[in-house]
Image 1 (cartoon, rainbow over the protein chains, first blue to last red):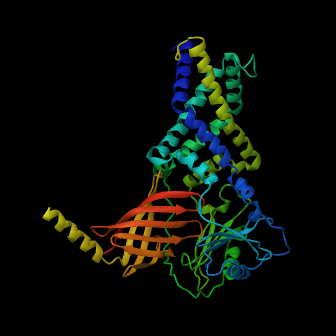
Image 2: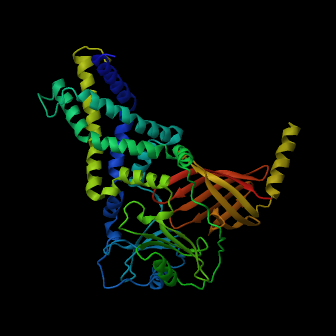
Amino acid sequence: MRKHSWHRLAFNLHLLVSLAFGLFISVIAVTGGIIGFEPEFDQLLHRDISFVKPGQRFLTLEQLQQAVAVAYPEEPVIAILPALADNLAWQVALPSGIAYLNPYTGQGLGIRTRGESFLGKIRSVHVGLTGGPLGGPLVKWSTLAALPLLITGVFLWWPRKRFGLRGSIFHRSFWLDLHNSLGIGAGLFLLVLASTGAVMAFSDALRPYLYRISGVSAMKDPTYVAKLGGPYQITPDKALEIARAAAPRATPYRIQLPAFGGTYVVDLVDRSDRVLGERHSVVLDPNSGVILLQRNPKDVNPVDRWMVVLAKVHTGTLVGTSGKALFCVASMLTVVVFGSGILMMWFRSLKHKQPLLR
Amino acid sequence: MFRTLAITLTLSFFLQSQDLSGRWKGSFKRRGGDHDIPQLFLLKQDGLQLTGSGGPDDSEQYPIAKGAVNGNKVRFELTTARSKFLYDLTVTAGAGLNGDLEIRSVNRVDKATVELRKEK
């Protein structure tokens, strides 16, 4: 095929894919850019109950339970969620919602009921657009469609390698330059986001094949039987002590009490491991204190490990706040790239009366 | 017409008289999700009241709250450290318990469909 034929094929493919999926890709990108900072936005939206003044020492879990009983009587504690920063409130899962407590004084700061919020809606749109049976598949295929869109975009840009702006907004050249410059500027980040997002979107379908190819199997189910109904011999503080000793490098972030679940489940995070750090979990018999199950990052098989790596790259958490910020900006620019593309098309077809496809 | 009435009455009698107590196994699938998540319930029916526990398997069981049986309709909820699960199920002929599930967490609500079968 001759050089200009390849160029024409790339142009037509770029145009058709963007017409079919561009709007969906833009919505997915913008919502993704927002939910990348969901924990930070959530804390800001609930700053009156999220932050505390750091004190000398934390209360024990038993003292915290007593504080909950005073602040929220007749509400059994399901789990205690210690914060990973000294200036954040600890959360306590109750049947009616999540209570926020000052871990230094035991003061109840407020309770949040479970249910969809603005941030939750943004997340729902990111993973399912408008919902319904078509929403999920549309997100999957749009994410996959972003790959040829980006690749053909780079292919079309390459011969002239234009970067910068020319002319006024009333001319096609301005929008072409804007489309090129922003598309190339954000392109690498968008390519990373789209390719990791595509693997994540199809992970349920891909995983069995990857297990088969690599010869690994999914994590085995635990063999113990949980029994509900106390009283329990082991206190939450003792359970926490045993879990800490079992995973000395890790910090606890969730302690589920045996009245809900039948065992103590202590989830911990090793903050030196950005990939699988939060995969530490210790399950304890609430009467004997015997460790029934301990999950470690090293137990995660290579397929699942790579899936986690991709997810962490996609969300930017692997590279920290600066990485998340770059991905967020690139995601937001998608709207401008899509909008400038539409304007180029308008100039081409309506103003200059040229056919849409080459 | 008499045949339809007879079938309806027989079916409703069967559904009313069925005791839900026992082990129920099955799964739920989130809307938009690709895979089934296992479910195991140990139900105890006392008239119109339903108690017991439920979770993914024997190793993780949560107490059932606000359990109620109304005709062939069954409603209950359970709460884990992460989410509250609200079940709205219907008893079906052939020892089935199917219906909808709402999973409420902080900031988000997911919908799912549930299918359970009573173990013999």
